[in-house]
Length: 246
Image (tube, rainbow, N blue to C red; front, side, top):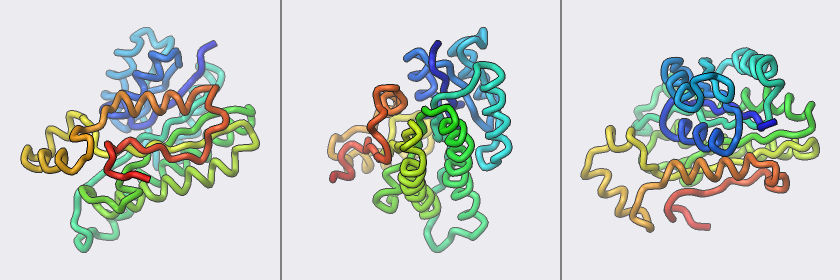
């Protein structure tokens, strides 16, 4: 039987690329997103019959919603093997202008969502004796952010730390927890929202002089999700074109 994965924030962009790459690798995939229409569009593109892909719509900040999603996976396919915590929200904002409510909003989606998802699926994986959690971090969470708001950078820094905490907690139970931290990616939303002159400046700042490939990042996720990756845990893999070297 093929392995089973749930990808959050999978209605577009990097999440859709990850869901697509996992499905191509033979996984049955639950495409989860707050946008039901977008999730259904991606799931239908992967498999309109619903046999190997289906859509789920829920808010990742809601722990009971994650529990309901897991129950649906158990009902439909018998359980889950992989969780990809990709859902996130970014906003450009000047540090001193961020309100407490704006801070809470961004942190809750990016950090709380990763936390409650890892709790729910981590417990399921621990009970089964195997599982993979892959979190999507960000270069902003490593260098403090230069093109995003402080709330986003702080939340993604928290994702990197949560990765280590869950990895340590679940490692003895056959469960690995890892993080992939992309830099600027070649996504439609980047070209739609970043002014051409600003984008040129971004490219000039990247040592490889190009935006990252979402498909390459998705391939990193597939590798970390594989059964062969059982000795890799607590790691944070960079994919930033050389903007951060260590």
